[in-house]
Length: 317
Ligand code: CP
Image (cartoon, rainbow, N blue to C red; front, top):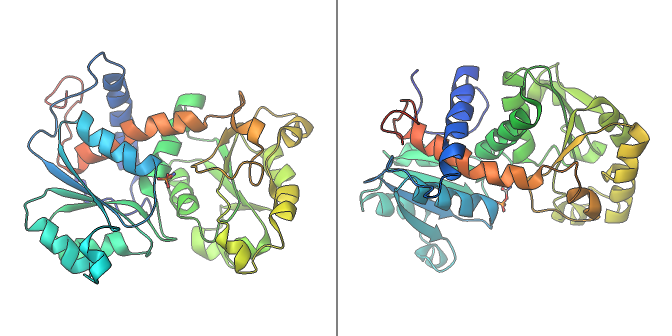
């Protein structure tokens, strides 16, 4: 299979490629359970993690994935760099590439920043979240978690609840899940749903106005972080009202009489979009998502740097 050296989003990525990434991630998850959870797969490769925006899970799991694959990792944070003196993104990355690097992982507040880097660099570019565009490795780790939990993706029903318009996690999930044959629904306040959602994602995407209906329908609910800055922009009357109408709670699950799997990309606003107790309950797979993030990122780094042999039997491990 011919695979692009970049991963900018899940829109347009073929089912075969997503399946290969998920299968490879499962093999790497086995590697991670070994007493010495490390393989020489990317020895000699240098990967730069460029983080222009805050991150806990994505930054640490990319760094850990690189170490588990024996790559050399360089971590760049915009604060404390020459970006603070006005250096442009293009100059920053071209100077870093001049030091001979093989791959760049970038998180940036601007939608399109990862795509822009592909125009400036020879190195492979992995999008770790760009503005409101996409967060493809989050979409992949969410699919891996669902596949583990249910043993399949085809035919599952997944509801994504919250701020759909501004969420890169929602966009990557919708594109990836639909490609894999999952039925997808969204639910949120009208001010946080794209105006023409069918034009954005296609006619097959379902829309629920009430979170209780979404829970009643779904096998899994992916609860999005409420971006608190949206309240300042007048898109929400108050956090209390949001929690009342769209907060996912144990009571709502009990009313629906459904054992729904609860997902969240983090960080959680406890008591706003998700009841604190439910986040830590038997319904939650939130920490499984985080665990799977390392294996998925190992798979992406491995495949995007040219590997496609059997991980367990070939040079991969
Ligand atoms: N899910 C996610 O992107 O979390 P971080 O912002 O902590 O990386």
